Image (cartoon, rainbow, N blue to C red):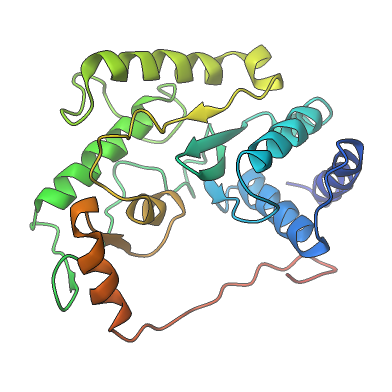
Length: 250
């Protein structure tokens, strides 16, 4: 991406926010601009928008903003809005083969929070939680076109945790939205809430994969209380990554 493209995105963001009359705090607007850049440059495949308001108003604002920006900037055409329960994300639907974290061949490191003390799971340790997580991961990637992500899932079978009829409807609806440019301009929401309703894997665990964390905190819904206790009673090392533009640093 050229410097001209970067400045175009930030200028367009400012303009479109004003046009839809979205009263964003300066700090939230900077985060949104940085997230757009991270997606368009391939630094991130998914970003979580946990700023700028609450659902469902936040969803409406993001949809209006992205629809407007995509009409004027081709770089943003691959961006989509993803919803899971009350969480909302912006996702690059085509991904980047070199940098995308959304790959089935990427070996994730899992920390099992269902036990005390939490343990790093070895690749050979296929617990029930790991198996369920992999099913959710494959379900997620199966909703996108075959060339959307590196090494996509061959859809020979469906995860047993999701009813076949519901899975088929979910796939058909969301794949159509991704493949249809006209649907994109109207900014249809990719909503996986119903598809993951019966999944035992929690949103924090799924976020670990979607957001490209070095390790994934893994626990099932039935062990949420145990996970909170096991994590809150241990020391954590917090690391911060700062992304800098040529003129500003956020």
